[in-house]
Image (tube, rainbow, N blue to C red; front, side):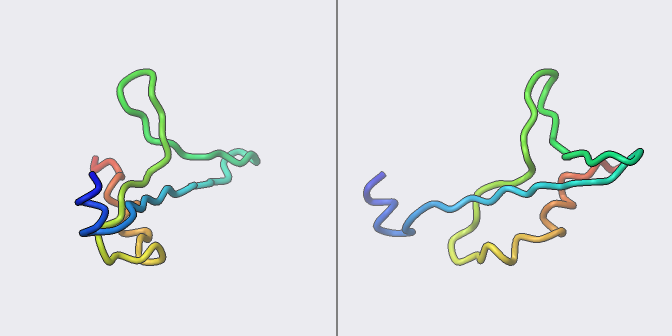
Length: 66
């Protein structure tokens, strides 16, 4: 792990909070993993990737494609 840190530096991750206004109430959207686990959309940033570049295109990759 020490060698990896020396090569690429600190690991960075990002999470997004998606808020929608439905039926006059705010709702926070979460991803459902299985039947009992929920999480915010996000993930680990690539080496050299900026936090500000992780945008709606990345969040859109989580959308269902019905």
